[in-house]
Image (cartoon, rainbow, N blue to C red; front, side, top):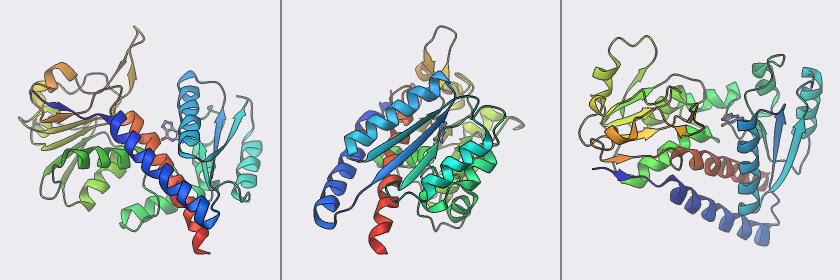
Length: 284
Ligand code: GUN
């Protein structure tokens, strides 16, 4: 039977450390720190994410600025707002919640966020910095996964690491972070010939494809660390991951639940990036 990695507990301790550091910097250096979150339209899942980000800001001591824009917002209006926030000294981090309505160009929007305030680490400049291992911000979900792996005490160096999924937001940067820690990394995707066979090689398996219960127990090596980034809403309204928890937990040494695994870590890492962005003002 595996040990369950408690993402809520790890997230709470990361946020508490941020709160303490920020409080100290406010008192000693007069540091201010703020996060602007933009949401366009009324996607219910996005609304929940944005509300949780705001609550985390309050818990850590950041000022939060929320911009809830109508689904009809034009590209020009959105870019004007981003430009205004890029030049607002109270705002250290800017996050534009994705996905955006179809008529808006996500790539252009991301490219217009100042790299210094890009707490999602989605801007090509920050993506490039991650590639060469010289980064200020790490993308929140992969960074959260790394914290969860670290919490198990399992060493990454020399291990077989398999990432299922190749998105720009999770799969690709995830593979890069595992590589930076000297894992032997394989990325699987929809064209992978024998997914089960590749997964069974993994000492550390990260599933981030968005297919409910794709990874079953018989695809997992005995004693593997299994991290489930999946967040799938089933027809019955329940949340479920990309890993079939019941069978996988028979094989894994450590496993994350859904919900309560990776999800809370993404927000904790966003708070960490916001503090990093704010602290960069101290160096000027
Ligand atoms: N939508 C789902 N996850 C994320 C995220 O991490 N950042 C942004 N900006 N949008 C998202």
